[in-house]
Length: 190
Length: 190
DNA sequence: AATATATTGGTAGTATACTCCCTATTAACA
DNA sequence: TGTTAATAGGGAGTATACTACCAATATATT
Image (cartoon, rainbow over all chains, first blue to last red; front, side, top):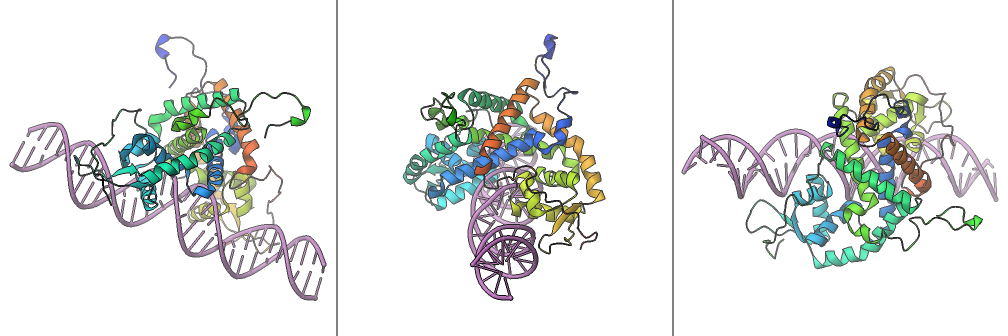
């Protein structure tokens, strides 16, 4: 999907063009971008779990807690949209976090369908406590890079995510397209 | 782990140094490198499955088939080492591939412990048939990038994987450190 | 008002990706 | 030689990340 073909300009070649020199290198497992990304994701999870050993928390759980930390109360689908998780995955994660008392499940007053998720005070304290370990894991992952290389990487990843967003299995809504804050949640819930 | 500290040179600052300007941006979910990589991995899997719909094969299954395609017969742990999978994950994947007749499980003649995995003729034909769809998925993932950006990305990912290799949960052996080809496999199995 | 559609959540099932613990076999060593 | 180490695989259990289907609720349309 090379943009601005209507200008008629000769665009700089992109990876979507045929006859790029990289076709042959895909034969090598380690020449496949998807394979490198799978491996790096694996390493990230490993580092995250290692740094957060004492807190017994996973990247997915901390991602859910993070959005609730800043937004208070949300329904499952809104959480999934914001962090790019599958709806059912979020349901599983929420169940475990509730079991630990880090969030509660109030009902909405205006709509009987959603079972909301709201972070508890204990959950907030937990996020505050874990934050340094999470940051340490993030820094450790990219520690081999110079600051310039890091910024280049983040820019490239960001570009890939934006351009490929709609192509994924659990596509993200555009940021704040749905204002799905629920301020009408019941205060008690079990 | 900034290299060449023995030279005494003032190194360009890396992400492992404290007081980098990125600490604050980690508060944002989308400013965390690990989070971007998780999402990109997710998108890759989605694209792979989409392109390979007619073949009903996953990235993990195709990775296992690929190493066997080029190396014939290997034991489970050697496969895991080469592609950076967990040992038990490989066992699961192998079980499914065997069930589809794409590989067989001969025993070794010299060692009674390993249950080897060897690609069948049907497995080879399968890899040949799927290859174009796999390549299409890889190209699609990086299609938003120019060739130059693509090469930069691959270089940075490669650097991160090499430097962080030992820190992961299922660390890879150095390439061809173990010559674990089994040429003494029985021809019939199960 | 009645029907159709969309939304939200739930359950069940599959695949990846680990953990921990166990047995069997081989290799190394005292 | 006998005991210990390391290696290879298996089984159970957990967590992520999906699909597919179903029930309840809400909204839109006729």
